[in-house]
Amino acid sequence: SPSNPCGYMLVINSAYKTDTAFQFGVTNLCPNTYYEISAWIKNICSKCSCDSTGTGVSGAGYIPFALNDSSGVQPNLAFDINGIDYYSTGNIVHTGSVANQQSGSDSTNIWVKRGFTYLTGPAQTSFTLSIRNNAPGGGGNDWALDDITLATCLPNMNYSPSLNPAVCDSNTITIYDTVRSYFNNYTYYKWQRSINNGATWTDVTAALGPASPTWNGTAWEYITSYTIPPSNTTLADSGNLYRVIVATTASNISNTNCQFTDGISIITLNVINCDIPLKSDLLTANAKIINDQAKISWTSSRETELMIYDIEKSIDGVNFIKIGSVAGTNDNNAEKNYYSFTEQQQFTGKAYYRIVMKNISGSKKYSQTMPLNKEEIDFSLGNVINPFSTELNFNIKTKQNTKIEVSLLDLFGKKVIFRNYMAYSGINTFSLSNTENLAKGVYILQIRSNEQVLNYKVLKN
Figure 1: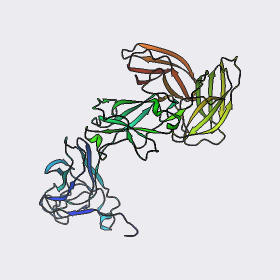
Figure 2: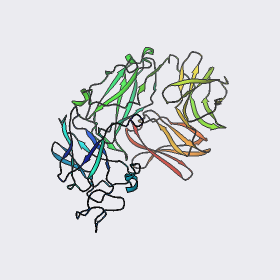
Figure 3: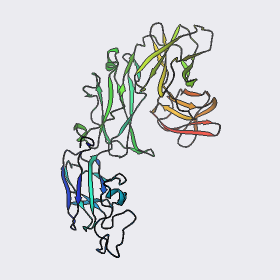
């Protein structure tokens, strides 16, 4: 009706015979792919017909099935594919009341979702799905069916060193993607590039795979990398997009209907002019909320030339805008220089901040991105640039100033690097440098603060 345009459902008054209620030929499936097949079902008969002895609801000796439940047969549906039963819903109970149903209201009787997971064969692209009345008997067994759905669970991409990696003009840069999926069969992949903001994409690698995913405790994952050549890192290439496409078979990777990517995460290349490298470094950076305003603090090494510090902000962690600048002290006798900037507008929700260190000729260095959340921050590990090569960068979040011990452990628990730092209330950025001589492999990044210990698995390339 105009006041309740909710669409259509299938309502079944089942007979004693078990038989097919719905059948559909499903096409354009992807081989070797897991699909969830489901539907929403409702028992629409609270006290119908007869009990299991054939006695009606008003007859002597009537046996109710259960409180507010069908007195007769409860609906039970079977799902089959190509004539083979794969799943049964079990009995579907009525959750409403007799009074509601008699008054014409069904508001307390809920729909339930039932379904299963099906893996297509190595070359399978279609099947016939049938839903059958699986409960013999006509005393009760009245039900509704809606929203029959076939869906698949797609992988997600975790790109590094960041979603907006910076590279000097005409230099190489290696970008990484950690592919994570609930299922372990998205093992074929390739890298793609877009020079028109995602309107079209071209392959920059051949189809690769199969990869060997490992279980990380919540998902299957593997890491792939691509080194962007100098020919594609000119100033004109700044803003180019990069992504990874995955599939479950070698043939699927070339099928646009069976190749998948993360629609949210994507790499945007940032090419900068580095003709004259900066001699100073950003040593630390910190972001925190004070009196409902974001305060950004940082330190730099000795400044042998006039420096300018731009403070940039982002809502999505990808697109940054400048919100202020701070001039350097121009004191080349100071071993360290201390700076801070307070954003004037009131802080709400969540935002990302970073510091751009530059000289008067325009050469730049970027701090790590520091996410800031209005919610109270506990002691925890934030962004970790993983995998790492010559240095390991990470963020620490803490509610109060605290001393921390940072260790990099090999898989035998041996400390290969150890550092002491001071972490201040808010978001802190740290870096373990000089890691280029470490052997390639898996390490554990361990952070201790008083009795709290954080561990994170990292990969050295």
